[in-house]
Length: 174
Length: 296
Image (cartoon, rainbow over all chains, first blue to last red):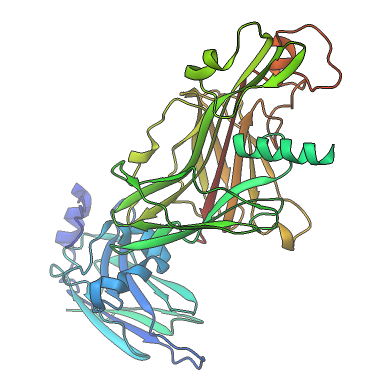
């Protein structure tokens, strides 16, 4: 179940897109989940979504305990509270191409292809990729990666978390 | 005398939450924003001075009703009343916004028969009023009272089906959904009195956690002509909201005889009665809700 999006292309924007050189066609996201030395550790719930002013936010990934019986893992989705408000609460779970298992500490990579899967078509404009992590009996952290589309292949946007997220980067490829 | 006063105030608390007494009545849900397909909330219900600590009296659970987004009534489960609080559970199985409310309305008042003042029995309504007053009664004073203490909880995305006004007492109509409140953001609500916009209604908002701070941090607000008001939440947390008319309540217009005590002017009897307070106002209504404001 994917939420519907409408990206309106204005005349000039469409022209700019057509005039732009061969644009990047993939976005590779690297998310580092920090190793935490705490008495009780649970892998964080992580939501990744794309925002563009004037458009409906687009959820790209949700890592949670999707395989618990009776969908019990969905009970805690609301703790990823900013994502829950902008997108999650209107979705149905599990969501095709979006739902995924929680990830272990370390670097986690995910590749999104323009025009395919949850990312879908990307019109020109200013976007923000947002990553929010919330950990059971732990804290919450949110990072924002702003970028302009079309992006140059090889360009990288970075951010670093301080508690629930480590280094995060978004790189664009052909 | 002291016992009598206690009984009287206890009665008032039962009939009209938040009316003419210092204590605050409230319900506190374990969650207001929930996810999943099947969730539960546990609610504490009490009457207390501090918010939200149970240190005075429990609230009774027999008048509390839960309504599902589709309008059906949901059973209050595992109700229990202790010394200081009541608690109960509500099982959420539908997506959308639920209302959990204690609502009462009725007529309070008194009459004089054979030189003795008699109170109208509890539970008197418009329909039973005539039967409740015996022949020969004089100095009949009545006051319509409506109270509403309600909270909202949402499973999934917020819905507004349960906000259809009944036209009785003070009611809240969302402009901003009460389960979509974020610190630093302005929220708007409309208030109705007997189904019509409640203009110039005094509304008091107090953040919870009073016990651990010196200042009450009370916000005294007033509705505009359309009965609307806007609140910008200073910080995340639970907030107690109260509005009343004719009850002499926190933020409300004066007690009997005060600015809002219409009964003093409209009273049927011109005879001075120093032993009894002035007659009750013709219309009393109170509204209480607990709102959760989330961190951004």
